[in-house]
Length: 208
Image (tube, rainbow, N blue to C red; front, side):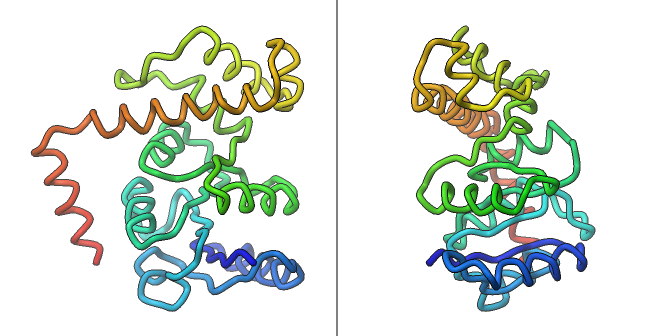
């Protein structure tokens, strides 16, 4: 049984998820919250996986939200309708284990939750597209094969079709995507000076 929580300020979505998740034998919904602060103040903070909306109405920074939830011991799966590539890239670099859009079938969401709970990365074409179109000066260097897999998967091909086109196994294709994620995490950590890190810690404390 995977215990999950949802942080989102869309009440219609939350009501729908509550109803749907109540019928899922492999998932147990501990609770929902409109903000990360609300989540961490309640019993749902013990969730193994937190579904976290990318852009909340309280104006909190997505990367900060991810770090706070991760610091509390939960894994994070970003869900959103917002096509903000830079914020998606930043949230995953900050420690989120994947990103899926809200227009996916709920079965896809369940599979993503299972993957995240098993310490994997919930790869999606949308996440690959965000990485493939990253133009930030701090983007990491990718190998030709990593770029090839990323580009094909971002184009809308299934992971199986992406692997077939590259002449590799699906597991190898996943490995390349995992490598891209790890490079972004390392680049994210290296991008901050000691002063910037201290300021970020200060900003995080302001939310508690």
